[in-house]
Amino acid sequence: MKVGVFDSGIGGLTVVKSLLQHRLFEEIIYFGDTARVPYGSKDKNTIIRYAIEAVEFFKNFELDLIIVACNTVSAYALQEMRESATCPVIGVVEAGILATANALRDRNSNVLILGTKATVNSKAYEIGLNKLSFTNVQAKATPLFVQLVEEEIFSGEILEAAFRHYFSDMETPNALILGCTHFPLISKALSNYFGEQTLLIHSGDAIVEYLESEFSFYRKYTNPKLQFFASENPEALRTIARKWLYEN
Ligand code: DGL
Image (cartoon, rainbow, N blue to C red):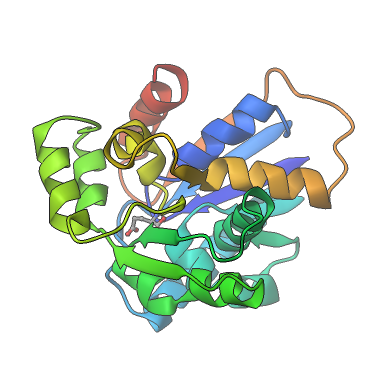
């Protein structure tokens, strides 16, 4: 299978990392819209327009599947992408909701969703979780974490100050949905802050769980072909990909 992975920028590499760990695809084509990131502060119509442009870009590759690694795009534009694509399109929000439901039996569990402003405003996670009978769901926009991760700040004082800024009045959740591509990179620091008992839901692992439940994979690909494209400075994307995918 040949898959396209779309993100607003570099963050979707966290999803590619999970795909590589599980060796599901023979070929992965990544497109990051680095010229226009962040999407998380943009409005719905803009996000949809950019997402449809990404579908057009992927039409050059005869893909079997498009994975939307970006939570913001998954929250707003999946339907429109499906309408213009010639292959199936799946997104991390739906996968994250199902992974949460599979992991938590108790529907009264306290679930905290972290995401961009746009993802939180969309209420996409809450609506999906409420449909599955979750009653105690909250969401918090934490856009500072995107900036910190882009600066490769994955631990330390500045990050802890940001945790206090966002979380000082919050109860410890039973599950924390990392509803933004960048947040898996600070998952260790988040676990230290909330404690080991808080379950972290990672979009990359969630999408793998979803793929394995929806599609049949007959073989593992140990050496998939990877191609990285970006709307601005693709070389910078390739450099960060080498680091995040193979060094951390
Ligand atoms: N990729 C975005 C997401 O997962 C985060 C960065 C952005 O705001 O574009 O929501």
